[in-house]
Amino acid sequence: MTPARAVSAPPEQARGRLHRLNLVMLFPLIAATGVLLVAMDSRTWWHAVVLGLGVAAALVAFARWAAGGLSRVALPCLAVAAPVWPVGALLIDSGTAFYGISFVGAHVIPQLPRRRGAAAVLLSAFVAATGVAKLLTEGYTTGYLITYLIVPVGVTAALTGLMFPNKRFYDVVADLEESREREAELAVARERIRFASDLHDIQGHTLHVVKLKIALAQRLLHTDVGRVEEELREVHALVADTITQTKELAYAQRRLNLSAELENAKNLFEAASIRVHLDRAAGFDGHPGDLLGQVLRETTTNILRHAQADEVWITLSDSGIAVVNDGVPDTPLPELRGLAALRERVADSGGELTVEQRNGRFLTAAAFPHLRSGTPS
Image: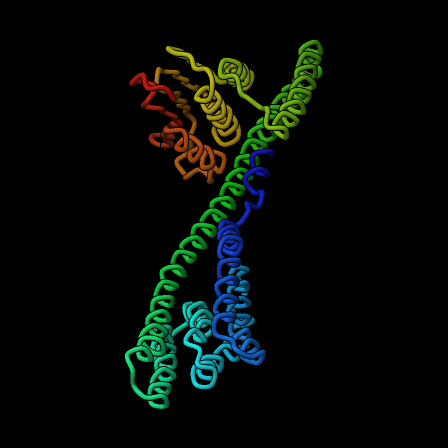
């Protein structure tokens, strides 16, 4: 089952890689910008402490956002960064004190479950209200208007607006990861179904043939001891071959030989006193031949189990195989799960599996139209 293990191995999360890339590339730039702004606007130690708190809140929020855990620190960061702007603007005369709240708010708002637009407007209004308060306190000048109102509100709105498509981008990445995980799970499930189907082919076929040969040996026990010994030798060889095939299946090395399956089916039908008409107009190698061998083996098992056949017609054409048998009861046959699983595998290889019950006969046919047209499989 090596392919299943390979598919189910957990891939490194693309979203985590992108977050880490942002952290490595942008965190130093954000930190350096914040330190530079604090150094420019601080005239005393407590100025540096107050403005530094806003920068620290911005760095913590960005780091947690990069790690995918912003919700845990969103409220503390907002609580620290929000007062820095009015204190910085009104008491320190710092036009860059909005750095912390704009950065924290721009990262927190897109993560909200609802009313993100209203929260973005509220954030810009808070920044604008502090700027208006500064103008009312200090008096209106063009410099104050630009420094405390236009630039802070513009930067906050722009940064918040940019984070919305960024959030959408990460949502798309998350959806793609989810889809890939589901595909991996489906691949594992399909591989398990394939394994179960192949195991059913091997074990089920062998058990029915063994049952048939032992029943024949019992009938001949007192009349033809030599034939009984021959049948028992064949049973022994068949069981040994089945053990080998089971090991090959476990290690993903099993392949069916269509020619061998044709000969095996012919011998089994003749041993069950069923006349076989074989029309072999073409031969197959590789993957189509493997699938056709599986179809023939499953069909042979079904005929021996479910039909009272007197004759079987096996036709191998340039596009596939068809097996028809008589002796089919008028009542519907039980569900043939082996053929249902094979139908999916044949379809995955570009073919079609046909199963029909009509007028006391049963048809099982696997066709690959691209083989007839000469297109490589």
